[in-house]
Image 1 (cartoon, rainbow, N blue to C red):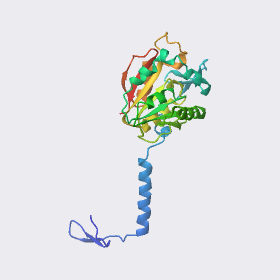
Image 2: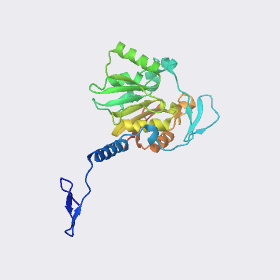
Image 3: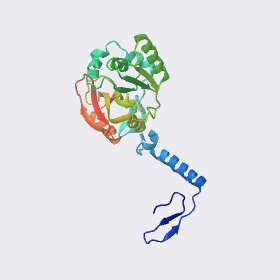
Image 4: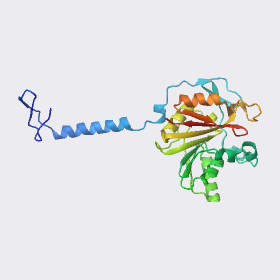
Amino acid sequence: MGADSDGGCARSECGKRLRMPRRYPLSSAVLLLALTVGLFIWSRPAPAAEIAPAVAYATCARSADGIGKVYMGREIAQVMGHPGIGWLERSDREKEEAPSKAIALLELAPDAVLADIGAGSGYYSFRIARKLPRGKVVAVDIQPEMLDFLKAESAKLGITNVQPHLGTIESVQLPPASIDAALMVDAYHEFDHPVEMLASLRIALKSKGRIYLLEYRAEDDNVPIKTHHKMTEAQARKEFEAAGFRFVMNKPDLPWQHLLIFEKP
């Protein structure tokens, strides 16, 4: 039923005139404010910890290179801290892992925004940034020492489109739908909150945004890396698909690593 502009009367279907209640501007304003606030709270992106699926991490006897925390049957590996920068920047890395070939396999537009999650020393960040003349690399790490190294390297190399960014153990701390793609190079297996991290990454990715996951192949005994720092394709797919990502493909063209591609629906 409709009301007159003065709030007086309206006509019912049977033709009777019904007295409408008088409007109270102050009460209406309060109600409108409450509805607006409620709508904002309902529609805003939830923090990753709120949207992550309920999961029970298990525990186990801590292995020599693990942390004693288990997710989907996999013991999470210890983090390689900033003292390991020398390993990341070793001179024979190209010969062993062919990172230039891995970067060539990434499908990135020249204006793409890519988040390098667990960027470390920026080994991949700086090499990818050169291929994004109108884009940038957001180099995410949880260790301030790594980000300090990144800043110094940016100045030394004269690269301006690598943005150091501090994340947490539970979140990449990036705005919703702010990145086109994410790269994780030999880092995911060390995340001690994988469910929460992937939930936060799903928020940060645009629709159809892709994750490029590089992990040492656990199926291959000839890959000379500690067991807990390797992953099988099956294990990676199980974890990422549980987080709501769609498996696209595995590009098995690298000497030691899987290049697994996942997509946000």
